[in-house]
Length: 91
Image (cartoon, rainbow, N blue to C red; front, side, top):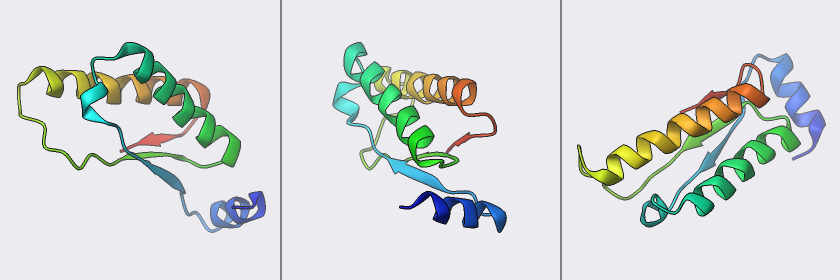
């Protein structure tokens, strides 16, 4: 999308977020996580978007290791994005 679109949307008080998925099979792969985290932050910054909406289609069992890893991933993204893009959001 063109930067003018984002400027117009923001002038109308519309917040624009990217949808991002993550392969839950890679939750334990720290290198893949770091690459994904940085790519999401870069995408938001490069496109003047307002944040990320994380979309996970696979079920994650409550209390499982994957659940803990996913919670950690969301927190890491939130911390990184908020540090680099003031006022951003992660959902």
